[in-house]
Image (tube, rainbow, N blue to C red):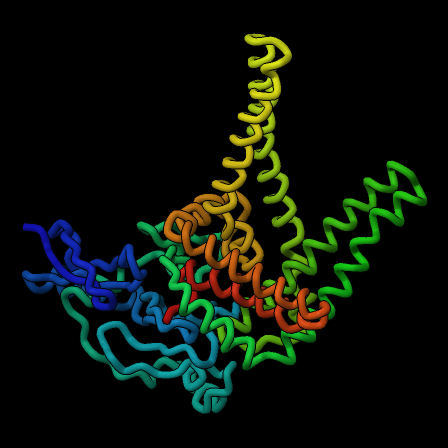
Length: 398
């Protein structure tokens, strides 16, 4: 008999096979991790429940958006702490219990008193409560976890680890971006000024090399320009990501994205390769029109081809816009970014059009103010775009 239940967070209704009783899965709408109820009681023997409880006994609540992930065993939690995926303000509890504790009280790395005093097992402070039925079965049923390394991101329904494609609310995005800017005005303005100066210097590199070494110099200058441009853009975006997440961002984050250069350039190459398809169509249509109706019809073929090309570029931009951000944010590799970006893009076509227009108008407003206003509207535009990405990927929620 099917099991019917509602998501504990958004109340969406689900109907699943009775064999899923006790397992855990994410809501396809809001990404909340639900334990499927077990109408018949315990789904495993006492010995199985005990083994499952040992294998994975803790859950982690994100300090960013409150999403709950896990279960995971002690060794895995310690690894997440070392990797920086658990922050001091994350909450941790034992599966089957509601006894949440801040991570800073558990791990000696965060200055936990018990851990610093030499307590061999910092997890002993959790109240041990028996688990049975759905809770125990759920402990062994969840494998996808946002704190896993990015190379191990797995698709679970519509969720990719901590990336949960979500329909973004424009009002919340704008409010959150403005509050972030207001709370980090000095940092964002300072970082944007450095970004602008570096971008202007970088823009002269192809011309300088071209003047000195002619065509080979121009090519070398273009490559240098591409590398530096990618580096400073990724740095500005990651600083914006940290600020929008509520993390402690600092000016040095502007120069902390050197490992993103090659993946982002690789993505750019693949994307431009895809753009050659409509260019081929333009030439093909022009040739066919010319062959069928003579030279007078060739411009018609070119016009149709250009229209197809522009439509292709627009669809590509709307559906895969977040893929570039996923790579910059260290959430996906080059080819992982395409399906993940598509899942986000399909839920947010109208939203990203609105965000693009609004952020463009914000930036343009600074230009109208004799360019001086750009030092304020520029970083705000960056925060609007980065907040949109974080909200639509489920990393920041209202």
